[in-house]
Length: 290
Ligand code: 5GP
Image (cartoon, rainbow, N blue to C red; front, side):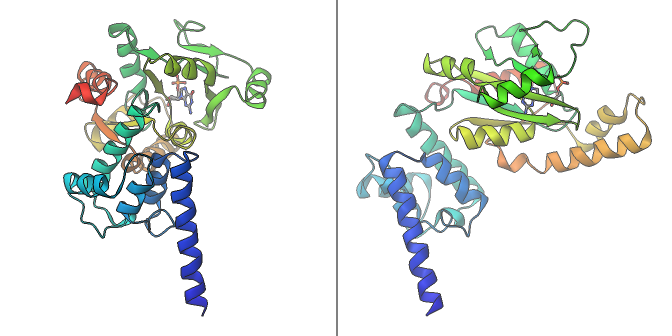
């Protein structure tokens, strides 16, 4: 009895997910994210074909053709897809969303572990690719020598940061390294996307997760160190930190590296110019890249 009641409830929950996608109140990318995160959850138990058919303008025939092209067998559930199938399906859906008025590939988030060189890659892009719009974050930390207000950050005090949160002005925000708060102002990002421009966010991993929740169609790029040894060298190399602090940073980096799988693309930071080019290439519309 209990088992059959649970089965009915699960079926209803899956039907609700499909209805939301069909009505356009939930992005299909958000359903994929939930399914990949929890393969045994409601979304994970949804059959790929039912998921596809719930997307407006995709019918049974089209769904069968798409699945054949993606190499997915008809009985598969979203949670049961292999790594490559997951990526292919996500790319297909991201293209579909882009073609139907979503933000598509236009919001790109660059994140990665501490000391991997995200800031250096972002600065390189700022200097060499003026066509890329880099989001300027607000932060409560003090400016470093050479940093320019409104170019590198908006430097604000705690009170102003609190106000920005309260007014809903931040797309995401996080406390980084247990010290200062950093956040992405919402309006410039939304205005740029509405105008058809691409925007790059260089933020930490918590921020990347928050962007994915707020805008599921954002593209998440993970910057990888060339090796663990190299990351250790960059983290402890300066010798200015105490052994306890070094240990803490290594522990943080290890946890952060484990988040790589949540990202859509990985770029290895062997060489700053090369890594920057790869990120910029990911910002071009996918169709142009093929
Ligand atoms: P820094 O103080 O060295 O400029 O940056 C420290 C960290 O804060 C970096 O990991 C950077 O990616 C992150 N960060 C910068 N801006 C933002 C933001 O707007 N949101 C979040 N979540 N992290 C940010």
